[in-house]
Amino acid sequence: MLERMVVPLDGSMTAEAILPHLRRILYRKDAEVLLVRAVVPPPMENSLEFAEAGRAAAREYLLAKQDALEKAGVRVKSVVRIGSPVGVILDVVDEEKATMIALATHGASGIPRLLMGSVTEGLLRKASVPVLAVRPFWSYELLAAGGTERQPIRNVLLPVDGSPLSLESVPSVVQVCDLFESRVVLLRVLETKKHQAPAPAERAEAEAQLRTLEGLLGRQGVEAASLLREGDAAEEILKAVQSQDIDLIAMTTHGRGGLTRAITGSVTEKVLRQVQVPMLVTRNASAPAEARGAGAAKVNA
Image 1 (cartoon, rainbow, N blue to C red):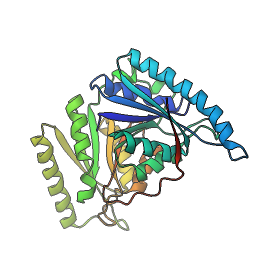
Image 2 (image 1 turned 90 degrees about the vertical axis):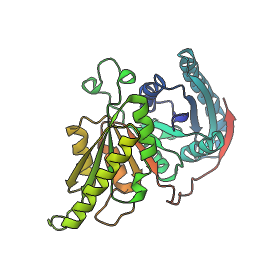
Image 3 (image 1 turned 45 degrees about the vertical axis):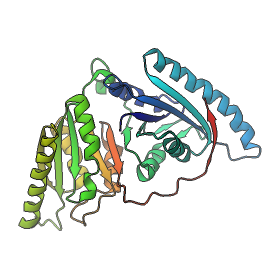
Image 4 (image 1 turned 135 degrees about the vertical axis):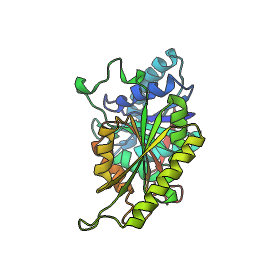
């Protein structure tokens, strides 16, 4: 998962908020980084001519970022293409055999530099590789002493819903834990119906699943603890982040397990819009990917 990471940038400081988290990984693993910039043609006549001019500026911008990373000993490649951000990013992932996408959400600086929350959500629904998504925060009160890039990932929250599909994040979690010697907090949320408590059989099944997962992770050398909660899945995930001192959430989108096991794509997006820690999101391999949109014109910087 951490071998070849695609990092979309749009020229904004907000999008660049992913870089400290990227260095957090690179300090511990010699990964290759693929910087990607999509140049979106303006909706006007001769739009490709304007896009060509933007492409030159985008190439210069990415090469400056590439140079800084290379001086720090990172293996880097830059790619600039004309097209929709989601389409460009997914094309690069496929062609370069990338193993992860890492980006900051809600980076936006005008129509020609479109890397917004909708792009992140599009990638969560379509990407064939895990997506590391970070919401940027500019308040100094939220910046850890010593810089984000030097902070360990001590506790990883892994929400599960009882279905095999919700476990597709486990391999990625194990890799992160091996890298940072992290601890996993397993979370199972039982949804209540009309203020009625879950049936005893459902609770027993959930407890059994959590014990099984603890054992599975333990056999792979990962320390794990379990939480069983009742209520709204997104709300309980956010509460666990605070109470368990979580540094990273790992989730699988489009989990299927019935109405009482709601770890779905909408829950993932709801959490992402509010949480203050990075999220590592894996799309179920069995979930059909949506169309990725317009094609892209290739220009490798």
